[in-house]
Image 1 (cartoon, rainbow, N blue to C red):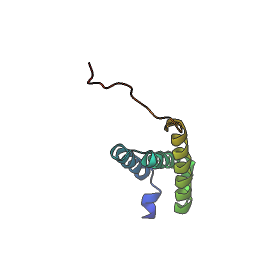
Image 2 (image 1 turned 120 degrees about the vertical axis):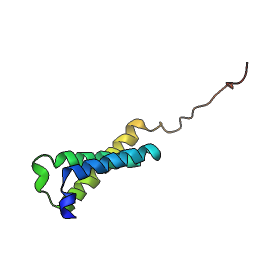
Image 3 (image 1 turned 90 degrees about the vertical axis):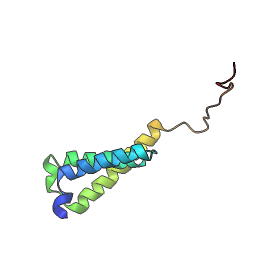
Image 4 (image 1 turned 30 degrees about the vertical axis):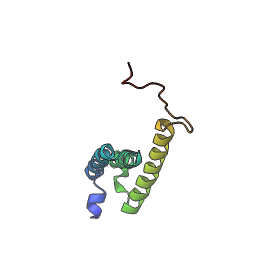
Length: 92
């Protein structure tokens, strides 16, 4: 199991699965995890391939939290803003 956790393609495959899950269940939650997993997968391509599994999980958690907070900040509706309609599309 440790060998799989330190393999780059496992992290990128899990990022793809989480991104697909985000399409089915929207809300920025799975997308934050997908971005975190993709960044850890890309990190494992470089010199960070010698990191231990607990350190990889810590990096994954931190990157997922940061990406989720950034997604929430840039793509969420501003507070108190509600879209209202003054006419019906069926009225002639």
